[in-house]
Length: 240
Image (cartoon, rainbow, N blue to C red; front, side):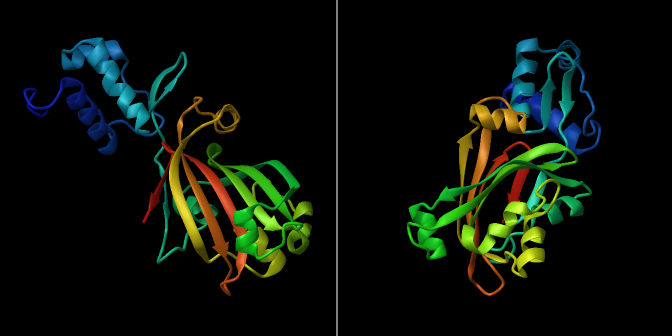
């Protein structure tokens, strides 16, 4: 372990446990020793151990389960942003990670168009959009809240499609022959889980979420869909 005169004790313990996780000593979904055991192992107070464990929970390495203890998190999903503004589909990313992609439909309805949507799709203020809201999962674990917006007149048939446990990209392609290959513009920022999102994603209220706002273009460079997604920060990582 590092020199205690340089690195605070809680930080030393944190890095030691992190190394044990990354080295395979503690495996995904495995329970780590309780605070009294770790306190005795490192000859430090339980307060010091608790701070190290809490930081590892905040960084997504550990997860506390009420009444059961503290467990090693499943690995974060790494989604690649390939070449320019391109992105791999979530379902493809899951399968390549050895996980089963899933989806649960929360809502679908017709909504008014807003200014940024009107500019992207080139529609008028009287036009309507089809809004699809889902929770995407990996091996049954909630990963992000998905919000998709399509021009209603062109995509009204999507209202009748099956949206549970399906890929949005594959559904669009099968129905229209168009699919997302690029983004005209996208932003990523950190936000906090609302009460509704906390319940949907099974995270604490105010937990950090990564908000991705992306304007997708099809294979011919034409506007296709807008995605506004809220990812659980401890379960997801973008690779640039």
